[in-house]
Image (cartoon, rainbow, N blue to C red; front, side):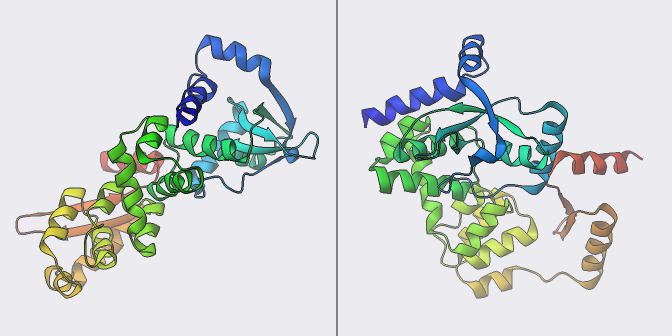
Length: 285
């Protein structure tokens, strides 16, 4: 897979080093602007989930300052002047929302195989994928293009164990993968569930109680069946549930209150930093 290794280095030169003066000069020679309606999405883009609040924030930035970095595209066969995205769909979506008529593009003439490889690797290098999308991307490269896990790890700059552990997440039930896609479960949480007999029940328990990865590990070691989960989990009393609702309504965020043997804890879940800032301001006042 020497070709794959060359691809990885080529991608770094093409995308990963864009902040250097040399790449800026090169980009200035190869970037052009095209009508935004002449650019279409890549149906095989490994990234399928786009956080709405993040996209809104990017849209505001694009309205104020435009697109600071071009999207990577390839020419569409038999359609002169039309292009398909390889990478940068989030920027392209934000540009559409912002009402831009043109979008800066970096044109790279590649075939279907190279386009998919670039799309997957670029997203992984930018950490733009959730754990399930990353695992599916790895699996697609291995199934369609005959990468080994070691060769794939070499190309994307990750360890072989990272690739193997990430792909193991695809063994989890679909309902658990939904938690992963939404960010309610981290990859660390999910890895504790891979060998469990009842991952769906445990995942629901972990999400509802806002457990840490260490707490999730302890739970999966102690609990062996769904009935055991029910016996371990103490139902919350009406007063606690009412207090959770009152605080949640006041903050506009999900709040979980857990009583323990000594004391307890309050967990406030936020999806973006602006929400955390608002909570901090309330606490200060």
